[in-house]
Amino acid sequence: MNTCRMTVVAAMTAGLVCAAQASEFRIVGARALSMGGAAVACPAPEYAAYYNPAALGLKDSRGALGLAASMGVRDTGIAGHLDTLMGLDWEAATDNPEGPEAEAVLAELDKIRPTDSIMVMPSGAAGIKLGRVGGGIYPSAQVVVYAHLDTEHVNQTSPLDDPDSFAFNTSRLYAQGLGLVEVPLAYGHSFRVGNGTLCVGGAVKFIEAVTFDVRQGILVTSDTDQIQDRLENADKLSSGFGIDAGALYRSASGRLSLGLLARNINSPAFKTVIGAEFTEDIQVLAGAAY
Image 1 (tube, rainbow, N blue to C red):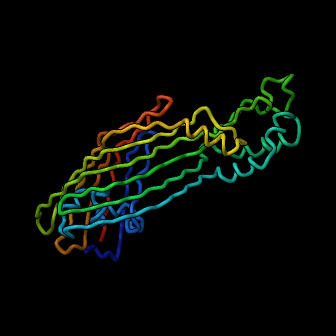
Image 2: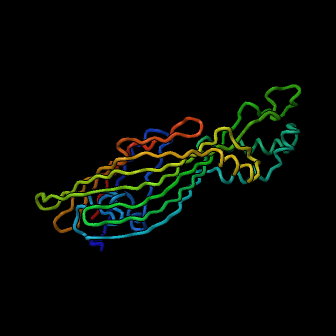
Image 3: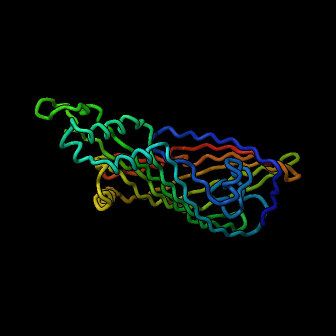
């Protein structure tokens, strides 16, 4: 069903994501993973509703169906520190802030940067194309675990004499996340332009979202039952809708494709249990494939 054979792929991706709580553009399918941002210029027909609805206007295929699943993990440096901290005796360190256990904990905490975190990003897809209409179900999630360090209570002194003693340290693990199930209905149309074809298209998406927001913190030495309990009481389910629009140019030879996609033009937002918001801000992506 795919008529695009590429010997060279060039891609540029510009994500206009303004809010810190906005999620990343999630890659769907092995072909798109190998192409990077160029997939918006030459998406697989079955995933056109997700990558660029304008591609539905092409006559690459009358119908297509695809299934995909992936898992991404990104560690910016915190995993090793957490592993070390969980192996230290935190309770003994706070009971005796002047002892060697406290010294070891403080030495490890000092190595953690504010930007250190670990992100887990599972995703999946069930995409379909029928003529110029496309749709599907696209579940994904993005969960970030990071540390909030107490940099005031770090003195290796007796808590009876010093209010900034390590005995009062409140360093915690925090977790935030956004899980989405997007169900788009998309349409694309094509026009003859000079020595090629110009396609435009759009998609309206129903979005079911679940947010996770653990701001009260989890002790670094918490057992898995306590962590699971905090996460189970930190989720909130809500729904909304999103709007995508795209354009695509394909040369008459079919060798050159240029694509432009604007996702979540209406910036849908989803509340968390503490009243904050996760916003799916507009993302603009451009790609070129030859």
